[in-house]
Image (cartoon, rainbow, N blue to C red; front, side, top):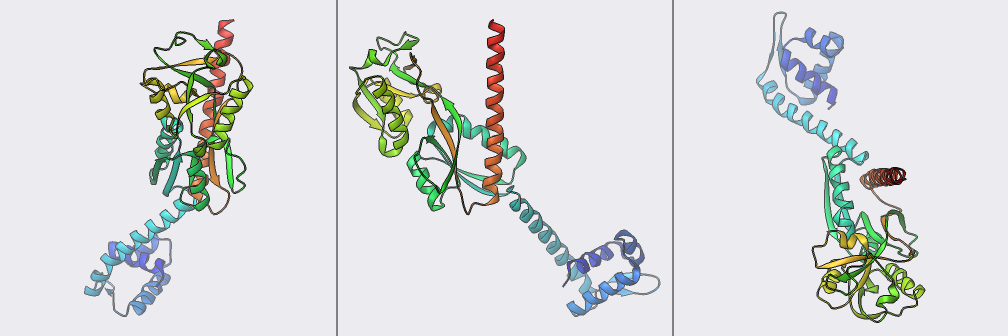
Length: 312
């Protein structure tokens, strides 16, 4: 049964006029009559009663019309959704993120993406970096926002999207809390609370490289897999910490973030996807995210340069 025959039937059922329908659908009247004839033969019943004065639907035609119209609508919806899916504009995106990416980066991207892709659904979960890598590899996660570096994972496509400095996190009552800049050697003898290596080995090794370069072997009193937990431990007086500045930015805990007084490597957040077997929606969101994040970084740098020129 051909869709064009059904659409021709529905058009005639609305106008009850063969010649008028032929004009509307840009088809000759004999060709239209042949289409209806072929449809009636396939259905096995007469759909129209027709003479020189009028065209009427038969009882079978009335019954066929309503279901045929619904079927056409459903088919058009199916075609539309198939095209949206092929362009990455419909479906479910499973996104994992570390807590610092969940403060601003992920919520803003999801909100902006939904504005132009309202039929995309999201499953968002705060997941540790190492767990994200495993889930991306097994296919249970589509996109990961994780803390770099992550070492060699040839099955993943990873790109850095955000860089930020490390800061020394102290209780607000700490003897150095009033200082804007602090040397790490000034706190060499204090207890530290640090990120657990098992959850992000690359990040942990980067951090300990900073301590090594400063000539410090930190006395680690407690470890944790979530930065908000580390901040709470600092506020409780368990120890001090070195964390990316974004970890402290939105915290209401009684802590202060002091700039470290010499140049350090920057902490970086990356966007990761699997290199193979990923649906179009993943590439669509990834391209959108890269465009948004690169654009916002460029704008921020322009504002910083303008502020420097104004200051001069």
